Image 1 (cartoon, rainbow, N blue to C red):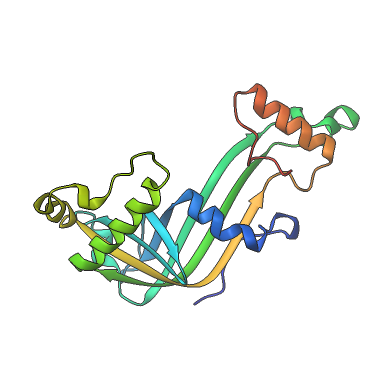
Image 2: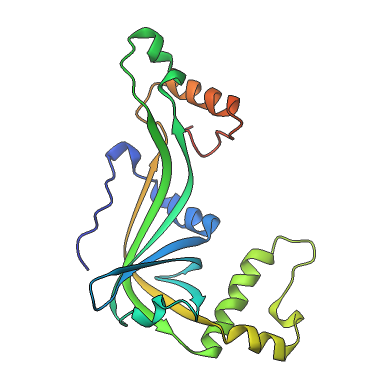
Length: 204
């Protein structure tokens, strides 16, 4: 795999113990691959990170999967909440005025080799695990087995599985960590005043 290119200043590096929980919580990714013609493709996918594999599925009608060369490099981009940060929220604006706008966000890049799974049994198992992951907290969780078998089979045919064997992980949380406590408090207050939940958008 080529060297990764996510720019991560030291103070913006996500804690290693937080990376998997972050990906699990977001549960989606933009899968980026490059076809034989050198043109990139990207598809938004529901995903699970299982061991060293990131797995998901996309629509059969989406030509992206046909352009994937098995074993070729892939990038999966998992993004969390993001927000504009106004310099007017910083306490330091009143002190010296040397402030500029910025953007706060969290992102994880997973790179590896990609493989397509056009296999009904593999796709069924994946859809079952995805469903269980998202239904488990519900009072009456729905299961794939709740639907008639012929209906399940009919709805599995239009999707194709994809798997990325993860070889590198980079994670960034740009959440005002380089600002003073007073500036971070100002950002939190500004976000709240704008109707946004500052949780996850400002460093604790």
